[in-house]
Image 1 (spheres, rainbow, N blue to C red):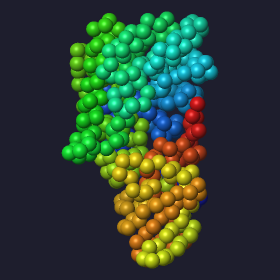
Image 2: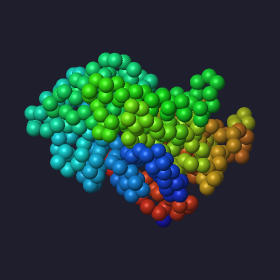
Image 3: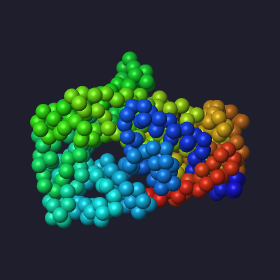
Image 4: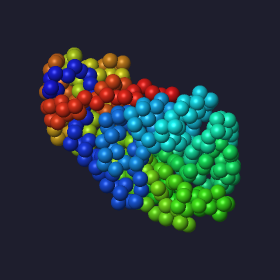
Length: 386
């Protein structure tokens, strides 16, 4: 099968780029002495998770219980929810998985931790949890530098239905871009170092309080941008034990703009067809059959439009003077300077702004080698958002 056999719109994964991305991140984890526990929210694919495991990944990360169910059913035996789990129904589903796999999840409030403890104690179990820590992203998690966070961890450690396994964070502030005077690499190094040090110092404070001990306490961090420049370290006997990047398998336009990859590293593209063409006033407007439901409307640091239109898929060379100016549900709106624009019926490839949300809209990814389709990859955990 070749690309011409595929109906558009669809998502393609360039095999050589995928394999290079997987190998490089595993090599980085190995070099820094940490386990790579990849976040599957990007690909949601059993086949790709198995590729990661074959290269040396230890365990998987998911966001939701529904994703955990998919991967445990496929035989994965160590699954971590990097998410604060709240709700009797959610815990009941995780309990069903615990006889088949090591399951762990996050807590960050006394109410949530107490409810989880009560649930698992009532079923004669102790669930493995990590305290989620906020290191500057401003989302979930206890503040890294707040003495109350030490007290909270001690509270969790004392609950009968839980076992405190460690600390976990997502340094989402890596997506904010450089501060004044920084270049992209300096910004990512800063975030990686600040995140590492914040968790190590909190772990040391927990040790002084008698809540944690080096050698038996996990310290888990990860975002794809910060992992580009991650270097491990030690403090008071503690070290980072695992990293959890997800987007690195494919990369996307946001990652390119953040400096965490080059455009040539992007493995995921959308294949779309020109369905209408309108030349006017020195600009040709094209309309493609891939809209919000494929490319998504996500934007990020320095993104200009809704993806990068390619002139040459082999080299990932951008189309000169082209900009995807808007999306409706089923259309991409493209402007190209001049009259030398593709005709109706032409097929074009686009690097999406955000690979994770694009993949979740699709039932299948197509692994390609140039013009050849070499494998179909079901998006097994698609839509598992609960």
